[in-house]
View (cartoon, rainbow, N blue to C red):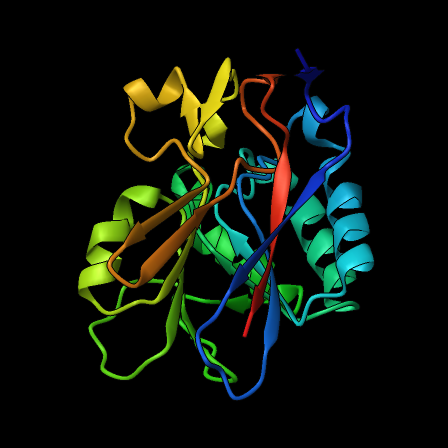
Length: 227
């Protein structure tokens, strides 16, 4: 049984591979649920920098719930400035960012040199959106926060979706077929990887928490090699 309080342990790097027949492969580092602004999340920016330094992705995607308090916005800006020294950074809001003030979070990301993905999608070498758009053409990737968006993303033609939000359930007693129990009994999307037709969703267990307690549920970022 592995217990962790706050962000005291190492940040796990989960490696995934997706084939989309891109002309140029791309390595994406997806991180969600940083929840900056608590005593127990103060180490998360340094852990994010270490993860990016060790993996050297082509792009870093921040999948929402970046801050829990307005006072954490300077820490978010500093982290993004440092991450941009490794790879371009794009971000979307999560429900906690909306509570803090989406415009404030957006400004912090953009002032640091990052991209606010809902306003400015990435075009190449693959289209990456920060909100669901009914567009033609493939392949396309969606950087999302809530995995409940997956069916709508599939209907809109996305090949790959990143999501977080659920923190892996935080307390896991059994992992079976990629699903986390008992949390999956209460929410369908408590799992690591889902497929509908030819579309795939990768769900991160998140980099941190508002309630700082985990059992058998490592905090993580996803390094996805898209070819």
